[in-house]
Length: 357
Image (tube, rainbow, N blue to C red):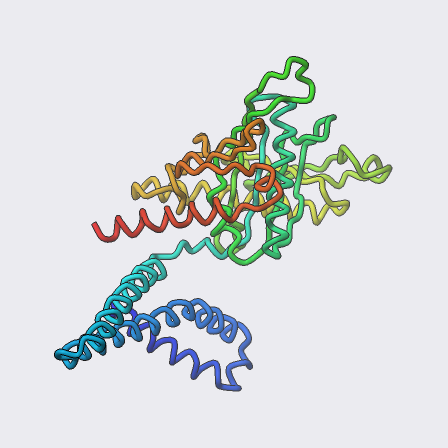
């Protein structure tokens, strides 16, 4: 590990020299790439330098102990410094191991999120709308931009399904843990006897994919236009601006009717199609090498129940890491970090354990 860190320190110094060159900015793409690499190395180098300081403090304390002789006060000070520096060194060493874990190349990407009502009818659709609100509020706290792509609404304001994008650096690194089945337990407004009903909603989180990463043959696409349905005034009854794209080899269908422009709807639909096809390709590669599907805690299977939202008890239960919080109202207002941080920490610990074994 220390050898690798020395190499990264040399690379960091090299990058600083290159970024100081005024000629670099004649090539904006190269400048952007070097700036990003430099930024990614900063937390590693900051921790490594603190680790080196702790190592030096430990060595100094050992020498002071040898020099203390019969001086009780000096001996006590040296012993205290030695214990403190060792604890700090061990903590920083653990942090460095985490920082050096192999990165998921998709972590820095924006995402496409798909929320679908499962078992529970209208109640599931209403909860799908609650989850959509939760994720958009969370995105706002991170400074990420959200944009609807398609939705199918119910009469009571729920969603049978809704697809939307969240644009922001590192969105996938945090939201990838949300893929799976979310279970809600609450008393529906239409329930006269006050019985708690259980419903489910499925969430899929897909990293956005660039055109260059996945080639789609135009001959494999069937593209239809149709008139939008839902809110939008008279315009939607006059213009066939909605787009339906069918990927013939897989039978996959993507629709987009959120924009008034047919071209914008087509672009959005293609973005979703690319992400879905890339996800299939990635899953096949993962299966082929018997790897975990994505960097996700648990099996990563979307059929896995990952979380329960219990309204009568104001409780959120994260089943993958056996974490329970009694602040459901706060959670549904977009305050997800406590659970997401715990999932990330568990994921990192499992990866470290595998590396050390």
